[in-house]
Picture 1: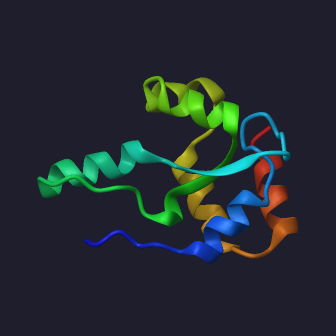
Picture 2: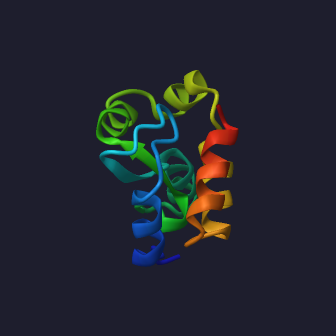
Picture 3: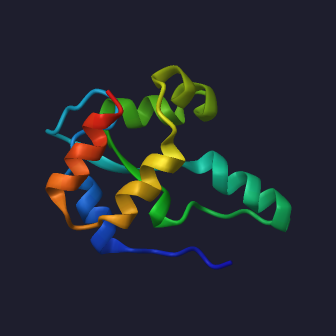
Length: 106
């Protein structure tokens, strides 16, 4: 399956507070990659995560996500990033609903 890009959704994600620390000054769209890697192995090819698997992370948390075991990192935060990403994708553009979803994980 070809990677699905959605710039409107990524802009929405960047407007939300960090899903981990709630910082809202430098939010980046961080892709949850371990799900896509499993799919890629099943398809015997490398694949970058679809944009619907993006969550808001500040720059510091985003760097942490990519410099450690991602699955363990998320587990340590007690956040299920795939559910979070898909919940946010369902309400793309609704800033208030997005912030409510982010805060519900805390």
